[in-house]
Length: 385
Image (cartoon, rainbow, N blue to C red; front, side, top):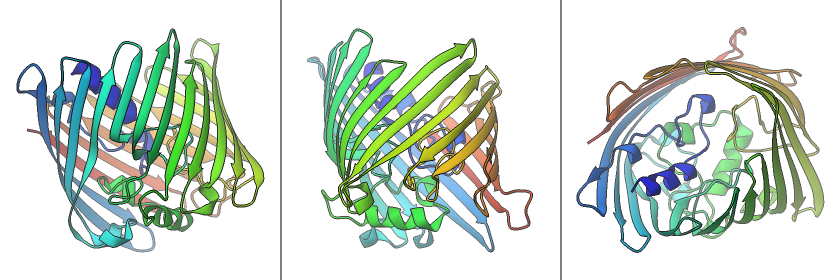
């Protein structure tokens, strides 16, 4: 079961979040997979109760609440086979709905978050069914699919082939977390709606990736309801250590758009300074096409935006030790090319003093020195039965 949890946690890395620097290991804070109960040697289960409250103040004040219950049942067969089902039931207010269209109302919503069968050995992994997959491309069509994943480990190299379509009953990114739904800028929000309101099979991905630890290469073909995401993609990542605590990270991406038959490029490079209690990033984004990308990286507004073509950024994060985990993040666009959202201050507290519970409190101030600043706050409480 521990092996299964490790594989699942890899799939949880990243998603659309309002406070991405304050997120836990998965796209929404969760204690479920780490606290499953054993029925026998092969069967485990868990139920998690969660509730979140979200408040945002711009020109007006809006607030939402999101109660949720989720469960996991997993079975580990003696022949390297695993089976897992993860249903979720949630209440969602209509005002916070971005997608999909046919469930854009308040009320009780439900869906299957994951349901797959997996075969795994020391070198091979084959996963078939509804699953979370991170391509690393950073696009909005990037997280949870109905598909198949085939991975092969050879020495220090991990390669995999993935083919999947976005499940339209829940929509891209799902509806299970407040931070999945509330996207501030209208351009990205409209794009999310278009992607989420697609019919089954209209949004999908086929990708091959090879990870050499400090280097990564991904070759992919995306298809989507939104023409801007109909493209071939070649993406790389280079992570070089310059000094003891200093790394240079570069993420070049080439995109061939099928809608206009043009070649586009996006390069994100930054210095990454890491110590136990402090992380600092200084870098630049250069692109010849507006990069409407998902904030799957280390910053949310400060890294990608619907108008970004050439943007510098500075980010500082202070991370004191657990079990009460205080986090302070600051972002600053070096070029100040926007009228709004050029800086952001994030404050967060994660309380994990209880073995099967977690309290997650966060707040963000965008353009906090201006009169028209944006204030966002949320609190989430989780408990595993």
